[in-house]
Length: 439
Image 1 (cartoon, helix red, strand yellow):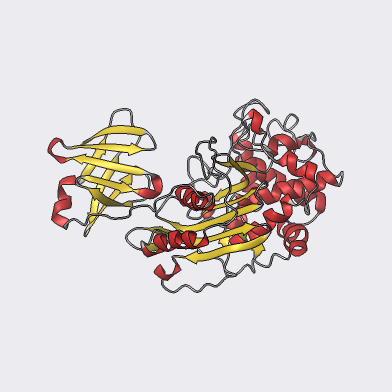
Image 2 (cartoon, one colour):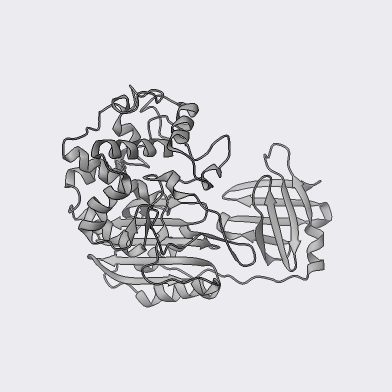
């Protein structure tokens, strides 16, 4: 699983819906209760309006054993960290200590193409550099502590995929280098910079970069019939890239002050945004998150097990931040549900009704399925009353039966339709359809 950004909401930009001034908080709470009662996720959600928190709730924690939490318990927010790193970079630019056009070679000449790559390229993911969080096709090498030298060597080894400015490709390597530039110019480590320039002036008591003394942070979980802890990143490996831990409330406080131009000047915030007319996905530290005609800016984050989104609508002075450290219902769909209620759109709560089959009824589906030209084989096993799937080289996941011979794994929007009399299975995922045969 890659530490990168997932755009939270991709729906039509065209609608005539007017923002409802009176948010139906009771319906939002009922929606979150519906999620919780059906054991569809673990996490937290916060809604701000006009700079005040109008709704906050943690959910799903009762499904965990041996866990203590309170309103100060933080979540690993992954690549939302990049928004903070970009803010600190623009702070240097405002103080004339750095320029968007400065070449990377001023700091790290050993990086490929460093004489052509600028600070701007690093911020907007157009540098051509790769992703150090994936090494030799391994997405888990950073679960154990590695040295800074190891990271630099991996960035150099991966080289460049294209010339700066020619394309846009999400680059954790670029953000790592921005973090090191911040530390070099300030002669301070990143956690101290976050504390001095963000947490302290904004009175964010539950917002911190990773430190040896960081406490009260939720681990990540995945569901395999019950919730199990995931081995997540050693976050000291991704400082400035994906290491910050925060409550959803503090994320909203940060966004409110950022868009009130109390952290950066208006011009800097505007430069951070994507250019909508040019259909930019990534800006220079902020992403656009559209919901019908409503435009939010912010950033998303994904660790090996926690999904986060922090977003703000300037026009409506509305902030929505959430973190899922255990996901059975897609967090994107959760956001669509909350925003639909906020903006008064028709929205029906998802149906979580499933069919329970006897263990012997599952036997007809068991086996390994493959298809010519499809890179993965899918092995189907059972555990009691639960059918499980496992792709080649991937962890197993539980499947829920919702129709006769049809199963789903909702977090990945995956459905499997079995045709046992023909030893076939139809895989459907996000518009992709694959006809697979039992080996």
